Length: 96
Image 1 (cartoon, one colour):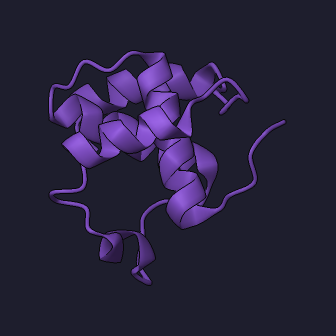
Image 2 (image 1 turned 180 degrees about the horizontal axis):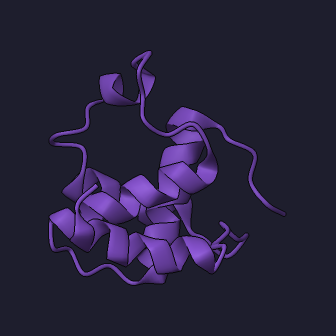
Image 3 (image 1 turned 90 degrees about the vertical axis):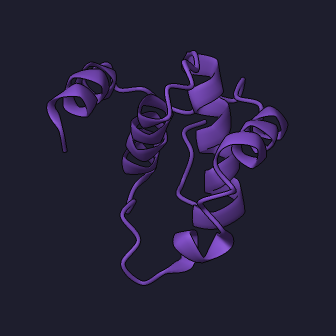
């Protein structure tokens, strides 16, 4: 992981972000479809060697690619996309 990504994601991980009930998976779907689906077809989420093994790791990947693409998403955008991708592909347990 390069230094920029590490410096961006480490503080978020240390704060212990959790997906909350306030996250909007429909908005997350729109953001995902507009910014992510061109490169991330469904196959990327179902491959045997997928990178995210936990909800926190999934969030870290959303943050990584948001940063790489220069999308300037706010915390709500990240949570919305994380919740959408989790519900659609991963099904990790979500915090109440």
